[in-house]
Amino acid sequence: MSTITIAQHSAHPLTVSRLGYGTMRLTGPDIWGEPANRPEALQILRTAVEQGVNFIDTADYYGEDVTNRLIREALHPYSSDLVICTKVGATRRPDKSWVPYNRPENLRASIDNNLRTLRQEQIQLVHLRLIGHGDVPFDEQLGAMFELQQEGKIQHVGLSNVSREQAEAGLKMGSIATIENMYGHGQRTTLRTPHGDNQGGEEVLDFCEQHSIPLIPYFSLVNSLPKADSQVAEVARRHHATEAQINLAWLLHKSPWILPIPGTSKLAHLRENLQAAAIQLSADDLAFLG
Image (cartoon, rainbow, N blue to C red; front, side):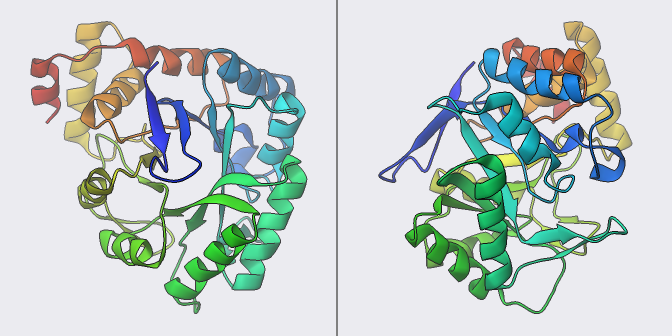
């Protein structure tokens, strides 16, 4: 599996395999509660690492705290090359809704909670997830993140759910290690998320390529356009592969600055997803996919 380097110009760059794993699907229904099959969830995490995955994406509002506790149970003590990335800026209500949790004191509480539940002294990479409009200015949120970085609780700061304009503003404030946005073959335009956020597609990827910042796409296996579905299905038939595998292969071919983190709650699907790294798309395939 090829690799990608996060924060390559910093004093502490992180080099990881180009297929990571997103843990959100390990939770119960509506991304809430314990997994339906806890032993399988733990085995997925262990198998991913055994197969060369060393970038795992989580959040303390998955569950709540479910994925962090699963990661700790399955993988602690962590190997030296394992990068665990988390997100702050949101929380969950008892009705399972998603709401901003982005005041400086909220962000600090979230970081402390992640450190505790993951059993870490420092989190290597944390994304500031922008959710809704709220009443906390962007620069105040990001400024709090950089303060936590200066205190040593965070090694690298990233952004999530951002437009190109927000990414540019963030870079003027400090070093942005990664950007995590919704992106995939079927969703490359500027998107309006369910939380009312505008987040960039191709224009954010272009920004990332210009500044050597990895783009971490989430929900990358969701095809929102019927035409995209048919194109991916046709290429999947040519390669005797699944549509999910072709989606992942397309991301890996699209740009060397993309770090996919496909998630699943099934061990068989994890193995299928990892096989996508070996699929070689031809120039004709890529032209057909657009």
